[in-house]
Structures are given as C-alpha cells and as structure tokens.
Image (cartoon, rainbow, N blue to C red; front, side):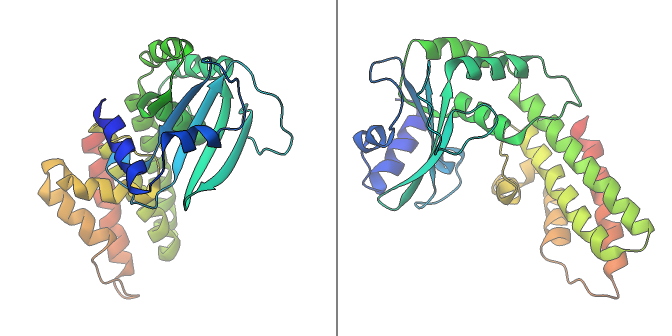
Length: 262
C-alpha cells in the first residue's frame, strides 16, 4: 500500500466508511472486473479536513445512458450521493473517451488553453487512489506517463496571472483603483499558484493557492513570502493609500512572474 492509499484509507476509517460502501455507491457499469474505480480527496494533497468530499471516477467500456444524470463534455454522467455525511461526487467515463482526452493532452503546446474540468480529471486519474482495478488501467497509466501535467498547469497559471495583471494595469492607468485591486489580487494568487506548480504542488482550486504556498514557507524565499502576506492579507488599505497599494502589488507581481516563469 503506497502513501496515498494509506491517506485515503485513514480518511475513510475516520468517517467510518468502508470500501464496500464505496463500491455499493457505484450504480452503473459492468459487474465484472472490467470496471475501474479511482478515488480522490483533498487529504491526498495535505489539504482539506474530515468533512471533505470524495471524488470517484468510474471507468468502463460502456454505460447504459441515464438521461436523468447530469453531464459535461463527453462524460457519461455525474451524480452526487451522501454516505454518512460525506458527499461522493461520482463521474462515469468510458475508457475510449479517457484515452482520447489523454492523447490530446500529450500534444498540448505552450499557450494552449485547457478546460479546467478536464484538466482536473486528468490530474485525478494520475494521482488518485485506484480502488478497483482492471487491465485497461495499465494502458491508461502508460498514456498518462507521456503527459507533462506540471508544464500544462504552469502554463495555465502563467496565462491567468498575466491576463489579470494586464487588466489590473489598464484599470490602474484609468484610475479605477477598486477594480485594479481586484484584478491585481487575482493575478497575485495565480502567480503564487504558478510557483506552487513549479515546485510540484499541482493544486487547481484557488481557495488552496495561498495555503499551499504558506504551508511550504514560500519555498525558502522568506522575503517574498513576507511581501506576499503583507500585500494580500495583512495591510491596512484605505481610500488614501489605495493607489499606492495597487502600485506596490503590480511591481511585486511583475517581479514574481519574471522570477518564476523563467
């Protein structure tokens, strides 16, 4: 049992949820060994708490169409069920569709925009816990080895940070400092997320960007960490100093992007 499996098992134990209850929650797919179940929770990234949701990805050759299930992209269906107070977010995917997505990710180039839901799916497939395995999963794992997720996520966050920075700069020049501040804050968070990703912390949810960066002590750069905390959380902003504060944020973001993308 690897470290992720141990973390996932401990999470289930604390909530008094058995693997059989997980299996029984999966309503669709074949009953033989051709089905794969992959589980994920925030605890695998050292985040979340005992009430965090569990994501389940059910892979099979085919599923019967269920019109009442929600869906997105080419996912067969999505549903949410509750087991002992924990939400299980379940997605059903065919192996064919999964392999098609992974193949497309293998050939992504710098500057290409990616769908965040699909990016999250590929990330979960690569780092999630296999609860029920099948021979087809070997093919998927081999395909995933050819996907450079770190480069894809760094590129995504770089684009987000620069786009928000450009908006902040334009609003600053137009002297709309309120909107400029909002855009600068967004840019700063994505710049920090980029730094996280370059250090192997592939976290997609904005609510965790700062926590991951702080938990890792700014990756040894105490000056940068202190400035980040000051500008984003621990500064007193007033109408009188708003312009100066936004200007300081813009300079800091520019420095971050220069230091961490090259």
